[in-house]
Image (tube, rainbow over all chains, first blue to last red; front, side):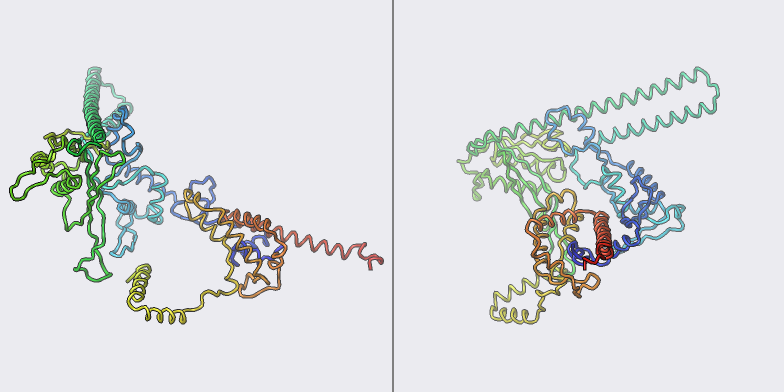
Length: 430
Length: 176
C-alpha cells in the first residue's frame, strides 16, 4: 500500500485533479464528462460543454445549404471525360489524379473567401485589418441577420468542410492543362445541366397539366410529343458527337504518348554509342517558383521587411538513362524571365554540357570540320504556350539543324497535363 | 523585432565571431557568464522527480494515428522504470500533495526501495504506461476505482481491528 501523495506523484496527477475525483468518490456522484464528449453526430442526445456551433441545428443547416451551393460552383475537370475514355488504353498506369470523386472548385476561390461569403449570406460582416485581426459583426440591414444565434468560427466552418465534403477541394492554379480537355468537359457539363433543366421543366409542366386537367386536343399533344422527341434526338446526337470528338482526342493523346515512349526507348538503346551516333531525347520543363529572401539594398531596415525574390528552376532530363538525373538551372528573377528565350538559352547550355555543340571558329564563323552532327534530337515539352510552345522554341529547332547539332530536330510538344508523358496535338519535325 | 530563433542564432554567431578573433576575451566572457548565471542544476526537491506518465499521455494524444505507430513504446516504459528507480532511491518522506514543498511523515516510497524487485518495477512500468495511454475519462475512472478500493480497504482494516479488540475471544482472561 502507498499513500495518496505517492500515488498521485507516480501517476502525475495534480492536487486539483486528485481532489476533483476524490469529491466524486466522497459524495458518491459520477465523474463529470469531458467537455468535448458527445459531439453532434453521436447517438447520445446529451450535449456536452463543447463547441456550441456544432450542436446548433440552424448553423448546421445553414452550412449544409451553403456547401450544396458551393458544390454547384465546381469547375469542370479536364480529367474526368478523358480518363473515362482513356481507361481502355494500355498505358492507364501513367494517369495522374486517380481520385474520380474529387470536386475541384475554381482556383480564384479561397477558403477564407468562402467563409466570408457564408457569413455574408447569414447576416454577418467579416472584416480583417492589416495585421490579420478578424472582426465579425452583425449586419442589421441584412434580412438574414437573425437567422443564426451566433456565427460559427472559421475552425468550425473548416471542420464541417473536412468532415462532410472531403472531396471538395480548391486546387492550385495551373495553366498547362490541355485546352481540348477543358472544352470537352465544359461542353459535357453544359449538356448535363441542360438535360437536368429540361427534365425539371418537363416534370413541372406535367404537374401543371395534372392540376389543371384541361383537355388538350390530340393533335396538339402529338405535336408536343414530337417536338420533345426531336429535342431529345438532337441532344443525344450532340452528346454522341461530343463523345466521338473526345475519343479522337484521347486516341491522338495515346498515339502521341506511344510516340514519345518510342523516342525515349530509342534514346535508351543508343546510350552506349558515341555521341555523334546517338539519338537523343530530352524532357524539359519549369518547376514551380521558389522564393528566397531578398537582401537587396533598398529595404526599409535590416529586419523589418525582406520581400522574397522569385527563383526559377528549369529542369532538363536526358531520357537515355533509366535512372534519369535532372539538370536543374536555377536563377533569380532579376537574372532572367521564364519565356521561350530563356528556355532556348538553358537548353543550349545543356547541349553544351552534353558535348553536342560543335566547335565554332569566331573569326571565320565556320564550324570545325571534324564535328559530326547527331542523327536526331527530340525535345519533349508540356502544353505551356508562354514557355515551350512558341516561336522561339520552334526557331531553336531550325537553329539546331543549321548549327549542325543534329541532322533532325523533333519537338513532340504539348502533352496534356492529365495524361503525362503524352503529347496531344502534334509534332514538328525539321 | 527579432524572433526567438533569430535572437539565438545572432547570439551564437556573435560568440563564434568573438571566439575566432579574440579567444582570450571569449574565455573571460564565458567565465563571467558562468559566475553570473543562476545555478539551475539544483531544483527544489519536489520538482526533481517528475513523472513521465503525463508527458507520455500528452505525446500520445497530440500525435495523429499514423505517428502513434512511430512512438517507441519500449523506451517510454524504460523512462517510467528509470523514474520509479530514482524515486524509490531518493525518497525518504513523501511530499504533501496539497503543499508540495512540505514533507509528510509517510515513508511508503522509501520502504519500497528495498522490497520492490526489478521484475516488479518492470510490471509497474508496464501498468503505468497502459494507464498513460488511457484517455481523459479513462484515467479518472481508474483513479476513482483505486480510491474506492482504498476506502473499502481502510474500512475493512478498521472493522477487523475493532473486531479483534472488541470480540469475546480478545476479552478472555487467558488472552491477558
